[in-house]
Length: 126
Image (cartoon, rainbow, N blue to C red):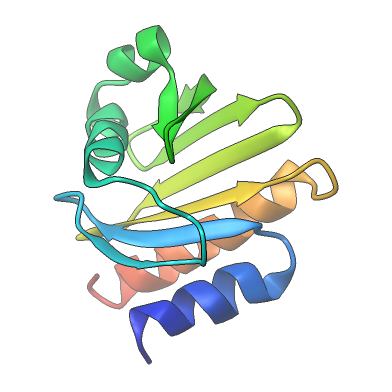
């Protein structure tokens, strides 16, 4: 299965994720949904936030050039919000799964989809 298939089928295809991407922990974009133009620098800042969230807490989380307010994080998880939209990023071993939701999607459903895919990839050695 291609990385794009994971994004299309396991994120966007669930109806719980509006935009999504799978990226390397180095910031490389492996696959992304149409129009989700996350930059390698934005991914690198999210990855740094897993270990030390102070930069995200102070400056927010940027995705596709838009600033989101930092909500919470741990060593594998980062959450942010902008108006009624939210973002979730989950870290596997070598990659990060990112998903967004809009006002018509419950954040918990989006978070679960993103986290489940990250867990699957981590358990698969990714």
